[in-house]
Amino acid sequence: MFSLNATLPVFLVMVIGWALGQKGFLPKQFCTVADKLVFKVTLPVMLFCDMATLDLAHSFDAKFVLFCFAVTAIAIVVIWVLARRLLKDKTLVGEFVQASYRSSAAILGVAFIQNIYGTSGMAPLMILGSVPLFNIFAVIILTVESPQHGKVTPSKLLYGVLTNPILDGIILGTLYSLLPFGLPTLAQKTLTSLSSLTTPLALLSIGASFEGAKAIKKLAPTLVAACCKLMVLTTIFIPIAVKLGFRDQQLIALLIMLGSPTTPSSYVMAKNMGHEGVLTASCVAATTLFSALSLTFWIFVLRSGGYIA
Image (cartoon, rainbow, N blue to C red; front, side, top):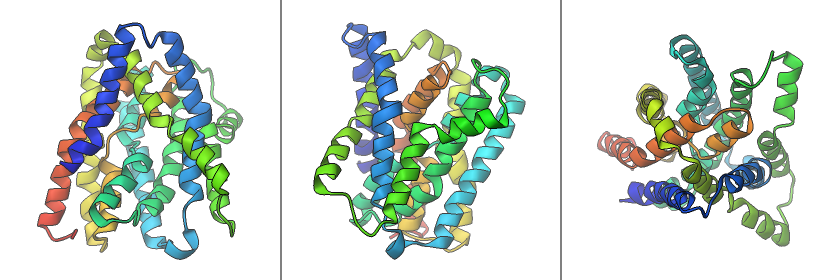
């Protein structure tokens, strides 16, 4: 029931966005402006807040963070190599790769662990080990594979990474977390209000922009990416984590990192970096809908094996 309560509302907001789009309340102009606002303002603010509140001095676990980092890097590189080899439509490579690996770690991670254990536990460290890589690779892959970009030079790629507002939010938040003082209450409430717009705006835009006819044509890559996102990565890496001795909150955090639905921000990023966005939107919808079942399944397996309490 918790898995359903966590994921189904996200899917329903997309459905509401689609219905409002059909009725003319959310025209294309709204979606264009909303995507730009999320990409350049609210999502960077949200990631800044997530990173700025990390207590690295007291809760840092090097082994866990390095494992998150290594698994994320390996998964992304392998998916990218296979996608370039196996996908017939090369214009879909960037969207396919991002949708296959990029989890709702920051959005769902804390909520899941707090529901089970009462504290955010290892979620902040999982975010530290994976979310910066999620976004760095997303910038690189979407730039290299963009059908609208010409020849990509190293300097152009570096400029794209350094000027990406999402990465800037992560970097600034991480640096701020190292300072010996927190955000003033006034600033914290203001930034929290802005960041709270991110998910509903992105979901409404995904729903309102959804094009059923185009999505059906991309059904095969959508299903493959969704299967990879919800089942394949978890099947490969969770047993390795168990062998290395990770348990309880650590495993739940890794489960969210590997097997939670594709984050709505991936759609915003794809659209703002020259991609069509249809495949990404379909993957967000499909993984969000089916993740209630897959996450419940994985939690049941881990509890049955005695690996989480």
